[in-house]
Amino acid sequence: KQEVTQIPAALSVPEGENLVLNCSFTDSAIYNLQWFRQDPGKGLTSLLLIQSSQREQTSGRLNASLDKSSGRSTLYIAASQPGDSATYLCAVIPRGRNRDDKIIFGKGTRLHILP
Amino acid sequence: GAGVSQTPSNKVTEKGKYVELRCDPISGHTALYWYRQSLGQGPEFLIYFQGTGAADDSGLPNDRFFAVRPEGSVSTLKIQRTERGDSAVYLCASSLNGWGHREAFFGQGTRLTVV
Image 1 (tube, rainbow over the protein chains, first blue to last red):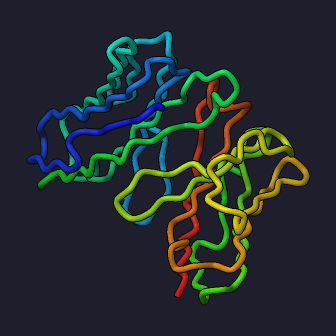
Image 2: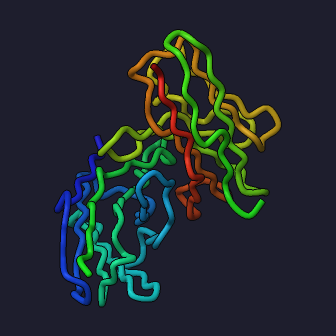
Image 3: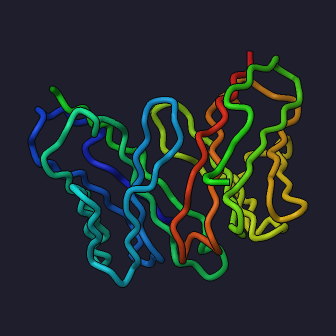
């Protein structure tokens, strides 16, 4: 059974620092991995999607990497800003025989950037 | 529309009542997903539609929960005889033709409170 774990559960860092959020998954058979941002009381905003054949994706100050064989992904945020404060969720699509579209989420990392 | 739209944004209902939650996906997206998120947890899969049919409903917790998508666009999640444990944020997402291949986009969610 695919399980997704995100560490740390919460993180507070001063503004301007570079930081890394970690995501691990137990089964390397995945179609893709997607990182989301969630603000309090809001829905999910897609940040980056990495296909299983890719190693990383970049968007602005965000860089996501994928090491499928070891079941790990990282989200790197450069030059953090107070506006980056949110919960960051990692999600994978398992590559199953018939049920390959049931995405599995981690519990998220709550990020607080201190001004 | 420009994004996934969910209505209502908030719903308070009494225990034992029936509720309907609506999701308008992005125009042209054939895949539609329902998730439920409790406080401090990641989204939990409920059901996935490909077109008009439910491709995977294994996440529906019991027979009080039912979802339809009669014309392959708008979907309604229906909950009968609501219980306090049903209180959560219900999230809807759509994807062009299945999450295994394309990015998924989420609505803002419906916060359901059963009193």
